Length: 511
Ligand SMILES: Cc1cc2nc3c(=O)[nH]c(=O)nc-3n(C[C@H](O)[C@H](O)[C@H](O)COP(=O)(O)OP(=O)(O)OC[C@H]3O[C@@H](n4cnc5c(N)ncnc54)[C@H](O)[C@@H]3O)c2cc1C
Image (cartoon, rainbow, N blue to C red; front, side, top):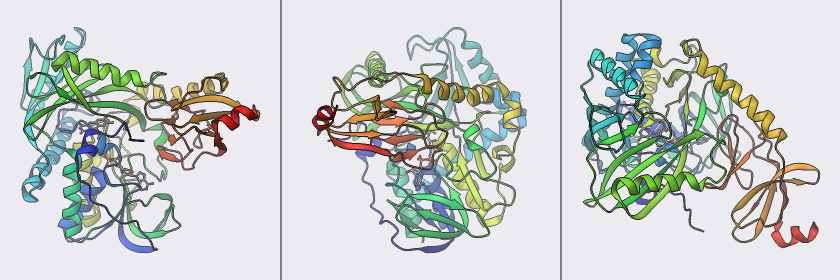
């Protein structure tokens, strides 16, 4: 069956096939993860004449990079006023400067490597979606001016309808993320990087030499290990599950009926609406992303998230055709600043995560910073993005909410009831009782059913069925599994146990 949830970017890009790793390997630098963070790191190293090996579980851009809005901007919603309040103006100015360096990197790479990725310059706006939020936008404007960011405040903008003032940053970028990363990877390989797809790392052992065990019994040993996997596959001393909060969002690409004003837009507050124009063969495509929620805690009927985005697109520009729909997740941190750099002092393991849905600039920056750390032992902005900054102390309320909600979700999940099998539709998942225990059943479109133990292998929370993606998602820390119990992403390390597989009719007969 066709994957209904393939992003516009993955649908319209020609990806390069890289072979899986088939034998044990020793290398100086191992990068795990073939999204914008990992590929940029491999490219930066290759440009310095340093070779690396990159492993990717699926294909390049199968992760969040292939599922974005495609904005490369230093305009990250309401962020500068928050960083300035927590860490001072100097830190906020450094954040802007570092993000700007990532934008310039993308522009230079596109020019230098002649990358055809529909890179366009525009103004990126954040708009107040309620009258109360106007003061947030005004404060962000004041902060931006203080930091020297070229910004404009428009009080009666007219578009998007129903907004209460907006702040624009000029000279920002949009592009086709998969075409960009695919081309960057090709350039890295041409300069000596090695890429292996369909090679999933499952375990890391630290030491002077790091040992990485892969799913197909292959072992890789490396002196430097870059975890560009979104959620880090090795935690070290960092308790990342208490500092990285998984949030899911949805996206649609539509062929519009009429034009709308040029620019990138995102609102304040919830539900999030992020809009931009992409030009494909001279025709506009409207991209709308939003409906942000903690993973595993969305609508019971997840299709509603897509329906609401399509209604929003329809209100803006009319919808001639829905070209694609998708969803993906990214991780927030307590203080809105990502973690980029060594996982502990003097470690040769590097983390790049917590981008808060701004990973096209942050992932680029991570690739630049980590490649500098590897090649020279230091890099710009190390203190700002360090995992040992006072992130929790400066943001205690958010941390408490994010740490305690999963405990509530764990208790709730244990108390929630089960359903019986009657009326189970094709494509439907349900929580049932099977042989005396709580379990998840999924009936596929060929009438095969799979029953799995839905206790998350991370911290034992019971999973919820995600009807849009046909996955089992953990409402505590964002672990996700497919309907066969295979781990897809997040903090867990193991697959779920399959309790039963067979024909739906046979199961009904058995009962
Ligand atoms: C809906 C949505 C829209 C967004 N829009 C924007 C936007 O417009 N602008 C912006 O700046 N940011 C945006 N973001 C955020 C941004 O897309 C991400 O932060 C960024 O793409 C993360 O890149 P990455 O390379 O770190 O991770 P990913 O792209 O997720 O790459 C990680 C890769 O690692 C692989 N992997 C994971 N575990 C293993 C393993 N054990 N072994 C081998 N491989 C592994 C995965 O398969 C994956 O391909 C958006 C996020 C979402 C959810």
